[in-house]
Length: 553
Image 1: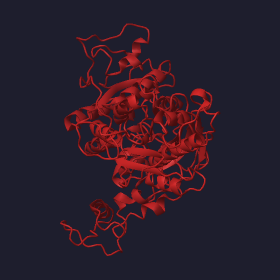
Image 2 (image 1 turned 90 degrees about the vertical axis):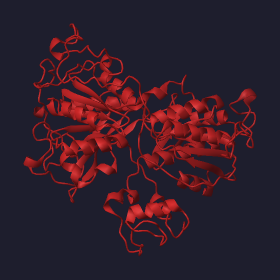
Image 3 (image 1 turned 90 degrees about the horizontal axis):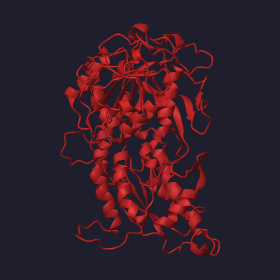
Image 4 (image 1 turned 30 degrees about the horizontal axis):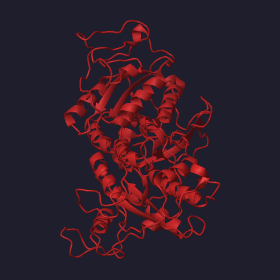
């Protein structure tokens, strides 16, 4: 965000003679903290505690939030003031309701497209039995509901649904893993965040469970925390739809300007250096790390910090700031008598109102790094996803390989594009070590690629069930439910299940007094805050401008 603002303020073509100002807040992925930030920035330039508002804020737009639960809270606070916000990571389908979120925009695709993409993927590979796991929040709830709706009428059946508690509970996680272990459905779709998946996968590895084909949502499919080599036997072959990567030309150089020499009194920069290099730049530091010599190399576990080759969420932030800038630029170009407001008037350049900016934000269209950016009437952007496959790297770690594209602008059935000539950057492990050998092989690199298939795609005959057949329940004690929105844990009768052997139009069973083995009754009724990941911190200067931008993380 800071890089984008500085580029715009130095531009000779965009917002000339005007300066963007900003404040950056960290919501800590928590809705109440995001609420506090929104209220603070609405109260003018000062954050001093006061029982009463002390004045109007010059803020015209907000860049944020990350998680959907946080964005819901912030959007409701901004709504009475008609202040537009552009989220870079909130994908919940709920935001398409313009009556509830009239000022909400986003540069990440709506989850309706992601669930459509995942449904097509499951059908494409003839995976007729799958398990669903989600986080306990709006993001997970709406995504699962959408996927179940997409799977109606298909041959894909849902064997079980489970919820990872917002406040992580190891015992509950082990119960979920027992369902996974005993179920014959070895394809597991997960709508969760990196923060929730980290402890869950740690416990999963300790249980030494293998043979699961993971299908990851965009919230964790490119999480670098899972790329270390110890994850490969358990997560290698994961596939999912990631935010389309972009290009930020100056990002690498900009990151390198954050160093102890430039910010000698900044504690956070010191902590960053200690984490990145395992040494302290300040001799007076209270920890026991050695003093930095300047010859240290970046620690492997934090190497992603300087890897700017394929920014995704950061690129979304970059696009969002430029969307505000282009909208302001177009507003300032308005000619009196030809304006869009009452009596063909224009906004006053020295007194721009947020709702006037929103008009131009709704109409904006510009190109950045070869990509066209605009918004539809619901505030959504063009739905593109990269198909990401977790393959083994040369050092045994996990590498994110782009094996295709989902283009939501294409006609139904033509959205998936496979890359037949994708370069193979790793070799498949010996078959005895493949984590998917007993069920789904193939999301690793194979030397020979089938014509017309995604590299590493399993042959259609590997399906454990006959293609198109959901009539016979696989063996094992798992609970089975035909894909149906009514089966969402938040809405279903916990004693009512739909047995696939009885078909979609026949009486359900067993009843409440006879639950199938393996049923979990741990299905909280109330969605809790989203914890989608990716944190950004920034500076603290504020320059009163013609237009202001506030960013929440």
